[in-house]
Image (cartoon, rainbow, N blue to C red):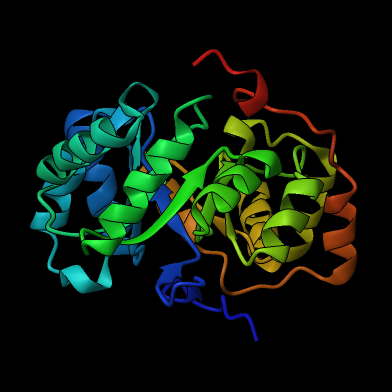
Length: 276
């Protein structure tokens, strides 16, 4: 049975690593603000922190991790290889930089940030090598469509454990979800809260019924679809609110009605038409 009844619950990835269902995203969070956000999240009970080289805040994340009283093995840290660093040797080099900035011996999850044409297969081979050497516990991708995933699986024989993509009620990625289910790839949602565009009457109605906020309803909907989620916030009360999703359950009817909101609408770039 899938368990997501409390903030500490984790989903087993196909390589045996267990990843928390809920994490904190730190995109666009800088300096002291990122240290404070990560600290607040860890104190609230979050155990997954999701950063990236491109966010230019790995040092701040690393500082908050070092300052925390939570043992390292209970924390789960994700970072990503940026587009300009892709390719085999440059990926190995970029990872060393990230590891140094984070102050970590081992990174829990390393992702390819975007499928850069002509480079992502070599980048993936570098990730496979880093895992083999024990520098990362798990390897995955971000923003990969089914054809990108098939490409690296055919080329390397290694299936990513995670695909982190834009996913929310207005963009439900049906074809991609089916592909990931078929290959036992854990989907993880970035921008789950639609960059704040939560003002939908249906979400307000369901939220009121459960005594919750629209944001909490959306994050709960993610979990009940078996999708891990990493809402971003810098406000302590929001970080706490986003974590308060383990004490209620959406009915089948609620789920179906939210499923009906899909418009294939992106708030972020389209991986197939992205100017890398």
